[in-house]
Length: 130
Image 1 (cartoon, rainbow, N blue to C red):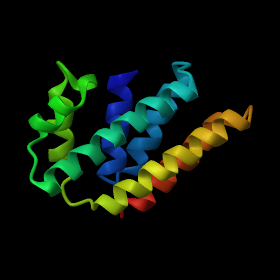
Image 2: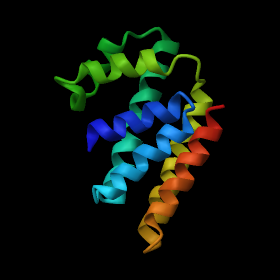
Image 3: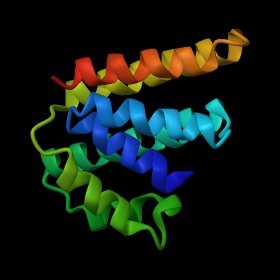
Image 4: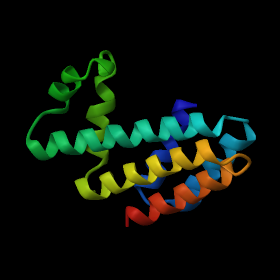
């Protein structure tokens, strides 16, 4: 799940909506849980945000990883995130996190619409990153 959702996050980040929707469809076909997909996607965007903030403040990703115990042995996540978020602004990434939080709430309140909500989220994220 994590590898496929990581690919999904990169497709969204690099504004490749067709690839993103194809990956989302594959996740659905493999019967992944929508809430697990959203959680993993949210974590990927949180990594991007943390990497961007660290870079903007002049803090190396390694130092940031040491500050978060959850990155122990996974320092590469923040290093890659700092590299991948490149031209995106902190505000844009914050908007993406807000979109993901709104989807999380909606997923927990509405039953039967999970994949539609995820599709809408992919579209909103792609648009936010333009």
